[in-house]
Structures are given as C-alpha cells and as structure tokens.
Image (cartoon, rainbow, N blue to C red):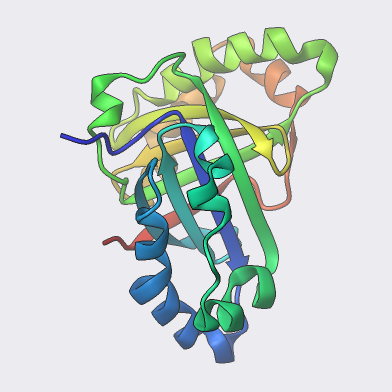
Length: 219
C-alpha cells in the first residue's frame, strides 16, 4: 500500500473575494487537486476552511519528501486557463505558501505513513531567537507536543521547519474535530510543565497563529 504521508508538507492558503469563491472552489475540487496528486511524490491532499483565524481557504499536501517540489514534474506543470483565472496566487489575499520538512517525530513511522488526512488541523507558525533554538526545540518536541497528544481527540502533533516561506517553524496538530483544543483536557496541558510559560514567551507567532481548519474536500 502506498504511503499517505511523508516527511514533507506543502500548505497553500488564501482569502478569496466572495464573488470568485464559487469558481475558485470548483477549480480546486474538479481540476487542481487532481493535477497535483498526479505529480510523483505528492501522496495525499485535502482542502480545509478556517474555523478560527485564517486565511479561510487552506490546501494541505503530503509529500514523500521536500525534494518533490524541485522535480521537473512539479515545477514544469503548465497552468491551465482556469488556473490562470482563479489561482490563489493571482486572486488571493493573506496568502500562505509553505514547503516544510518534518523535524518531529525524527522519522516517519508506519502509523503516520498509513494515516489519512485529518478532519481538522490546528496549525501554529512561529519563530524563536537563534540563541534559544536548541533548548526550545528540545522542549517543544520532548515536552510540549507529547503532552498535548494526551488530550482526547488529538491524533498526533508533527513539527516542521520551513524550507520555503516564513516563519521558520510550524506545528500541525491533527484532530478528530475542530473543538479538541477547547476541551478541559487540552487546556490542562498548557501549564502542566514548569518550563511551558518561559518557553512560550520565546516564540513570536505569525499573524493569526495558531489557527484551526476543518476539512471540506478530499478526493
């Protein structure tokens, strides 16, 4: 069975003018997702809409590795006439365009590789001062994410380093539904470790981070 997840992730997000949303959604669902899933190394994809923060529209692509975006098959895809009219890079605002490499877990497990696109995502995007980078990353991967993964409805958390786009780091929690981070069990983890407050203070979040998106379409 082919893997559904890899060690690379691409996220494309945008707000779309209301009068163009119908055509934009139709293009994405009927043409664009299928086009990208035809590129070798693009393993899976889904579309999401924001329930908290934004931008409203988000497409998430699971990549075998970040090298996929440098292949001829990916880079030399012709843009269709429809895409030239409604691509988020043309009509979108508040755009996100990220290519990310997985840094936590340190390796792809069978459980991750065989899992489908989650019904909801919570995504944080942040920077940290270089002087604190090592300590902060050890805490985030060794303490912060594992504790949140204990909350019911949290399938897993994966951490990423941006190779295209900013800020430098992203955390993607996969949820069973969009309300997981409002539960008492999730909120209890926020201060459960004595280092949490100090380490969180080191982070500078991107505008709108963290946000929550609910899955709306998948082929």
